[in-house]
Length: 92
Image 1 (cartoon, helix red, strand yellow):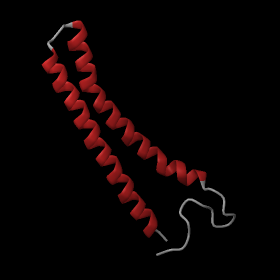
Image 2 (image 1 turned 45 degrees about the vertical axis):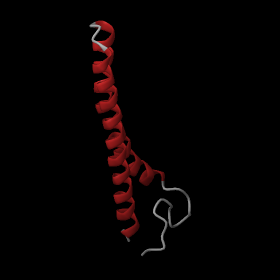
Image 3 (image 1 turned 30 degrees about the horizontal axis):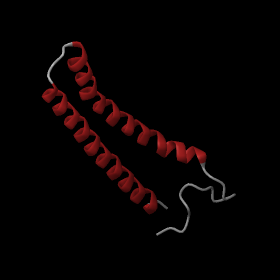
C-alpha cells in the first residue's frame, strides 16, 4: 500500500482541491438522484392528500415508500463511498 496521502499534493503537502472536486461531484450527483427519487412519493402524497382528499392509508403507504427509498439510497451511497475509497487507497 502506498504511503502517499490521496487528497494532498506531494510537492507542497497542501490540499488537492481539483482531486477533491473530481471525487465530490459524482457523489453529489448520486445523492441528488436518490433525493429526487425520494421526492416522487412525497409529491404523490401531497397531491393525493391535499388536492384530491384521498384517505390516509394511502398517505401512510407513500410515507413508508419514501422512507424505504431513502434507506436503500443511503445504503447505495455508502457502498459507493466505501468502494471508491478502496480504489483510491490502491492507486499508486
